[in-house]
Image 1 (cartoon, helix red, strand yellow):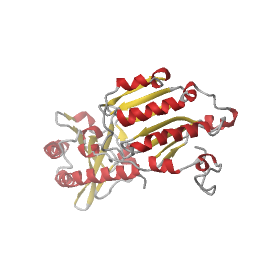
Image 2 (cartoon, helix red, strand yellow):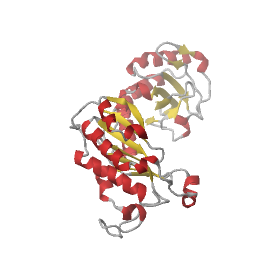
Image 3 (cartoon, rainbow, N blue to C red):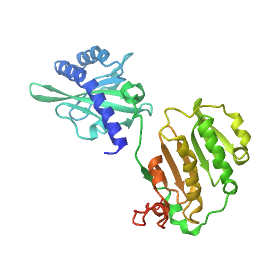
Length: 327
C-alpha cells in the first residue's frame, strides 16, 4: 500500500468510526416506521442532529427505490420519494445486506461537489427492509482535513506517450539559462539559504524560475532570466535564517542544483527540462525531455549518478545499478 492509499484508508477508517454508532441506532428506529413514509420521515428528521455534518438523510428499499423524503436540516423534500437510486455509486458496488458501508468518494449529481455516502442496513423481524443513507461533502468533514504531513517516497510518472515516441527525433537546444547556469545556481543557493526561499524551481528550456517564500507561502514569484541572473534579485527578498524545519541541509542546496546542471547537459536526447527543490519536505522534482517526471527525497537524488539516469558509467557508482526506466 503506497502513501496515497494509506492516507485514504486512514481517513475512511476514522470517518467510519465517527458514523457507525449513530447510523446503527437510526436504522433500528427506522425499522419500526418503515411501512409509513410520513413516520419514517419524522424518525430521520429527529435523527439528523446526531450527525450534524450530514447534508442529506434518506431511506432506500432493497431494490434501490427511495422510500423516504430527502431530509436536511432546513427541509423535508417529499418529491424525492419513489426515485430510483439503484445506479448511484454507493449502491452499484457491494451492498451491505447487513451492517455498515462507507462508499467511495464520488461527484454529487446535485452540485458537482466531492461526496461520500454512509449506508446502514435496516432489518425488521429477520427480514431485510432496506438502507438508511447519509450524504456528506468532503469539505465539511474535519477528519478528512488531517492530511499526511510528510510524503517521503519516490514516484515516477510517465508523461505524454506522443512526446516519448518522438524522443530520439529531437535534440536539446541550448537555452539562455544554460549559457548562464553557473550564475543561476549561485543566486538560487543564496536565495534558498539566506533569503527565505523554501521551494525553488528552474525551468531550463524556457529560462525562468519560480520561487516560494516562507514569509508568503501561498503565492509564488516568477522570474525571467534577466532577473534570476542579476545578483540584485536577492535584494528583493528579506534576509532570513535557513529554516529550522528544513529536512535538507543548507550545504546540500548548491550540490542539488549542480546535479540539475549535470542532468541537463549529460545527454542530447534525454535531458532535464525542469528541476525543483523543496527544503522543507526534502523533495526533489525532475521533469525530463521525454515528459516523464520523478519526485524523490533529496538524499536519494544525491546518491544517484549518471549510470542510474542514463545507463552510462560514472566514477561514483557501479554500472550494475539498475537504470531508471526512461525518465
